[in-house]
Amino acid sequence: MYASCRIIACARKTFDEMEVREDVASWSSMIEGYVACDRPLDSLVVFQQMRRANVEPNSVTLVSLLSASSHLACPSIGRSVHSYITTNDIKLDVALGTALVNMYAKCGHVEEAFQVFKSMEERNLQSWTIMISGFAVNGHRKEAIALFSQMEASGLKPDSTLFSIILSACSHLGMVDEGRSYFSKMVDAYNIQPTIEHYGCMVDLFGRAGLVDTAYEFIKNMPIAPNGVILRSFFGACRKNGKITIVDGELNRLMKLLLQEEPDLGANYVLAANMSALSDKWSDAAKLHGSIPERGLKKVAGCSWVEVHGRIVEWDEMGIGG
Image 1 (tube, rainbow, N blue to C red):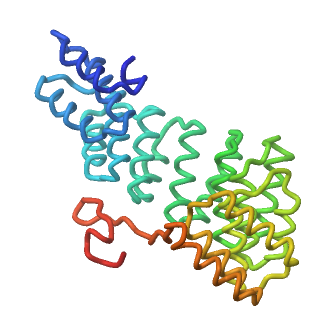
Image 2: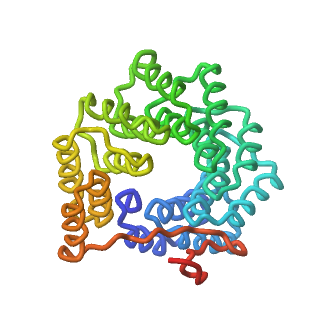
């Protein structure tokens, strides 16, 4: 109860006060509680204490440990759990199999994730979603679309989240017609109301394909106002293609909307300045650039995460780039 309410200190205090903790449920609850409260390292410590107490983990415990491994992006822990499952001939039910697939996919080992996925006797919508997302996030977007088709053929109905993944995959692959088809199928065949994420995927799809005018018409006809992500995607496409075909008044309206949406994001002012420069409005571009230090803002530098000797580090930690 305490862990579910994210009062993990009280949960641990209650756990420590228990005179008898021989039941695996007590240990599993504490481990799961730490994972749910974003303290995966503490969950591993409790698991070590559990093993020293000679309490054997069950499927629920192993799912929590795999979740901790995913949070930490540490495949070595997940592989140890996988080895334990195999060695002890533990049945790979839907929950445990899906957790394994998620762990491997989150750690970038998509081939191993797919091997586990194929070995599962039973799969639910979450299993398919995690595997399709794993393919897409790790750059195997054609495989993601192919697996989506297999899922449809199996009789499962995709949800809103899955369509976001597929539309994003189409965008990165430059599959404009396919993206349009999936968007229409989502609305007409599955009666799913498009969200801001779906609209954003479509704008990104058109923008990446160089269809700037189509992207603008799509934004103009949206039943909801575009958010900062959509506007940045559109302006980024304009900058990449080196042209702006929309009228000045409409361009100014969209730029103003972007700065109103996220006034404290320095990158928005840089992007708006670039749009002004493309329109040969150099004085406006200079004002926008000058407003960044005036507001005490700065453009946040990009960063990456990589695995080195089984440990996840940032580029800065390695002394490479910024």
